[in-house]
Length: 259
Image 1 (cartoon, rainbow, N blue to C red):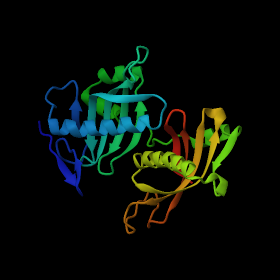
Image 2 (tube, rainbow, N blue to C red):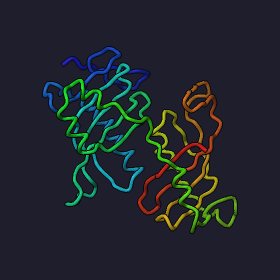
Image 3 (cartoon, helix red, strand yellow):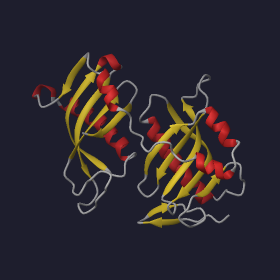
Image 4 (tube, rainbow, N blue to C red):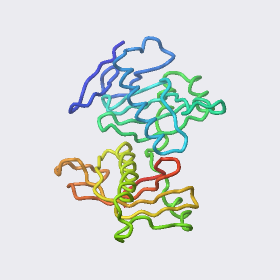
């Protein structure tokens, strides 16, 4: 097997054969692709994708097995397919298959989705070249449509935190910061820019939607001031304002985005 391991700025990448083109680095139907170093890198990416899903959905899963993985751009981008089992294990919930795109050098998930059974059947019946094509994401974001949610959350709302000193006790502040912190974590794992929480600006609870919390907060970019990320249009470390909708009942982030 001609897989190899390299690194860019201290971040491990997986060329799986060298060159800048599309390369297969794992196929559960090919016993020759069993390099333990390569498999370990792929599993780490699959676990990152699983963690992102768990923090953005009600249903929770744990990584089970790898199915297929390709890399391109000298191993900086990985497309992978893997199975996961429900947590907790229940008789009426079976393992599912995920497809994801991971930016290895940025350590974030650009695309993540469940694979429909029909798509999975077609995948296993495909040739190696067809499999590589089927692995390509159909869309390029893990973001959810926050506008739809915000239109729904118009009733039964209570402002639970703002500049009003009566709503600023230590316990309330700590709880709101924890939810904002979860939102920041999700944002960092789905974007090329990494933020740290500065402060919570305000928070509103919506009881009609199963105890959802809409929280607005500021966060500071962790990159150096001379680092430019075109996608986010950031030149300095000026705090940015973000907002998120968090499920208090089920402990997940419905959406998080820059304001």
